[in-house]
Length: 333
Image (cartoon, rainbow, N blue to C red; front, side):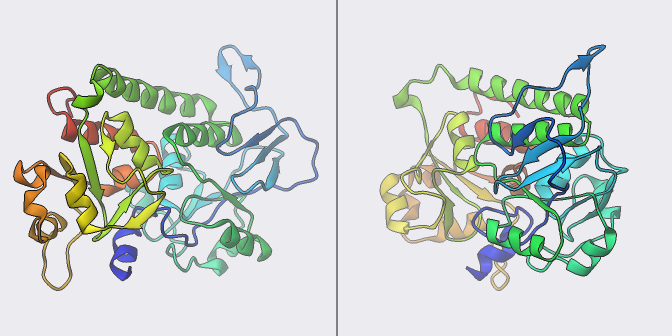
């Protein structure tokens, strides 16, 4: 478990329910419209001259059900969640971003922003002192942790995406909150186009042609149903051998041997501190795993886990890489 925490801080996975921060606004103002992240969105505000503009005051709800009202677009935003940071930059909010977590490394401009602590111990004093209009967090923060921060006077807006559509909805919602709807639309339109290209490429696969896939991003752990990584495998035309479990789970080596996956996906970021072995080397060395089809055929593919563990704009890039690994003859990188 210690290895898991070390290897997943960059990805901020749902397994690690830790602190990262979020959002803002005050309640009690007149409500123009109410939305919830990442649930179904209300009708968009009126368009003027084909330009999407947010009408304020705007009332929204986050993934915990907390309600926020914005009188105007936030001018100072803090994100202590890598995925949310990537969303904010992608929709053109570089100038408004007043701080990020110690682990936020994409895009390059994030490295120059003031650091607000790590996912385990965010710098509460620095966050309070920054007096941000909006503080955002994502899957790394539990509802209880978000409420604890609110009790300290930090206005935390939390997302909790479980599917690609939730990621898209969150991008659209942040675009609406910040009056960057046009920029958000460009991002999600590209994501949808790329997703459709992948699903179109694999849609003709018969059930018996679909390959079984095992994914391991931290030594001894895999992901089952109810998480967007499981959905990525499904969208890519694969069958997740751990789909009969829910969420993140420690693996049963015997079960994986029995499931006999055709393809194994692993994190290129994982290296054992003592042995210096990479995760694929560890996988191949396991007793009995040399009989697994994926190992025998060397169908073992390393991934940059930031592309598929961060539910942000680049998650579709991760989808394309996964699909190419499973069906290189159908999906090009």
